[in-house]
Image 1 (tube, rainbow, N blue to C red):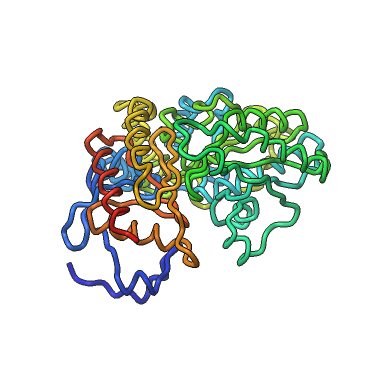
Image 2 (image 1 turned 120 degrees about the vertical axis):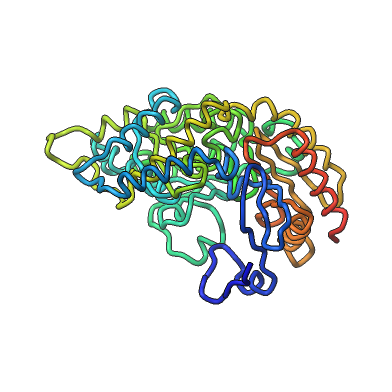
Length: 435
């Protein structure tokens, strides 16, 4: 293949000068594997970017997309409709948690988060609670890159560089290495941290708070698991004070934990759920917000000729994205991928926990088919050790993700046991090499 000109593309979330000095290029993908520009097989340990849950190169999705482009490439969704968007929404409603069967389509996870925040404001106003305009996020939360998501998120670099919305506060994060390192399940300690919401209610007044948003499992900041009882406690406090609870399931949705959604795994009811990524198996950008009937019906009231929610996107319910989504749901159903992870979770956990004692490893966290391997940082150079492990793994035929000094893993849900072993041994070899 010809070497591309690297100058024009300003790459996202990338140290551009570092990358372009030593680029890592992927050129093909099939099943569990990428192929690199130098013709090496790369085992995908990250489902692309947490999104290719059914594996790469699915012909069913490609065929559905091709058919739809030839039939109708685009149609407006403002005061118009097309059947495939209604069909896709109905199919999503079938797998959605109980009473979460009203679907608003977006173009990405970031758009889903901003949409959910707007829906929360609109709902509170519609039920006569217009003073509720404040949002509560959580430290070390990631909710995309829109101004709403950055505001409720808790990533330091985002909040330092970009202006945040007014009237936002944050719960403390739940990461507690001293008490919870190498937990074989959700951490035992930390449910009391949910009481931060009660503290913020007392500080700001419940009548000012519209919603609290958390990831059930914080993925992008290092696979941070909720302590046992934490989400239940958060739900109880939110309900008692009339605050909506939004679960950001852009990562955990569509089988990542061995259940269709994290709310199914934890048995905790949300009012709104944000999704994207696995919605179309990563093939066509798309997101969706799953709304409870109570929230939807609270807004969709009043005069029939009035626009109930003054919000939407040019690409909401895009017909080609819907075609990809329908084909993806077909694969999930036919291959039982939304629950397959449950049968592999124990082997995944046991093999990853086998890295305890490997050089630099200070914690391993797993849930479903996702894992975080935390490394001791180098003095004065945080993040560099994990980056070196990432590069070594790539050279050895494995794609992993890093966030600070944490290695994040989230393979396609079609993974086999021998491939789990390959991921762990490649990672172990890299840890043994990196100083």
